[in-house]
Length: 365
Image 1 (cartoon, rainbow, N blue to C red):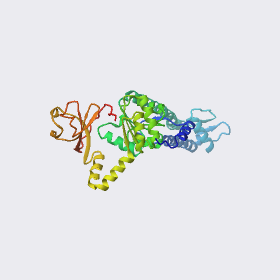
Image 2 (tube, rainbow, N blue to C red; image 1 turned 135 degrees about the horizontal axis):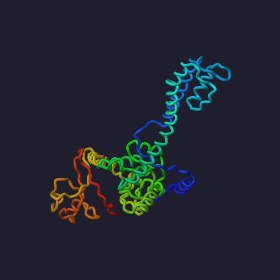
Image 3 (cartoon, helix red, strand yellow; image 1 turned 90 degrees about the vertical axis):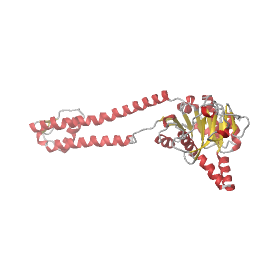
Image 4 (tube, one colour; image 1 turned 30 degrees about the horizontal axis):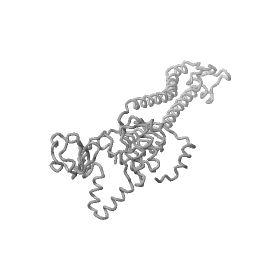
């Protein structure tokens, strides 16, 4: 197997401090810094307004130091009054100034405190709410799908799986890039920032309770390490991995992958088929694209089909899954269809057409 730069990558992993955290989808997009800046601006506005009110009615106030109140004294009085410090060196002496203090400055003081204290309470409440959401998410997460790598392959894979009816809250994306995780959470998926070759990162994604794991990393050596780690943490999950080089596929299967997709070879075969027969290439591309034209789906055998032969059914059956064997439509071992069989068929894509997920492990070669 080709593992270019594996030793260097391992040394870099030991030297780097990787940030690992779980990010859940958020409904509020407003930035915290913008919220704090807005509240500070409101507090300054209240302070300036109070100082101007005092300075306009400065004749109704008395300063113990010199007896008069200037603009600086007005700001000083506004500051100590709004902060409830109240040294008492500047006091309202006229009836008008006292009335203004009762009906204007006191409400401004309350507003000022609400703005400052409210910001602190909001931050604490937000942290508590996030912690509560995270704990609830962990306790409710069962039989979910973990996607390692959210590049082109990972996105396409999860779009195909979600087209079968899988909900976004049952998908956890693991990627070392925080920007990629932000893109995933924007689509409604939960995300974990970190290196998926480390068991603690996969444990944050609750991989030990996952039903299926999709490994769509950019490097083959990373895919092998992720598959090994994931299989150690979860013996029952269905693991599907993608590799670039076909010669690395057997090693991935030995590492615990139930199915291995060679992306480079698959793309090359589709290119060659399109050269030999553009029409056949178009059909294959149509089958690959989920939700349009023709779709390749897997479904269980219905009671009305039990006892029938493959060619006697209404659907175009490609293969029959019986136990741990995948039998071609022309395999004589099929005989007649059984109730426990699952059929891989080609159907016309409609909004209600989707595969019924198979919870069993994929057959090994």
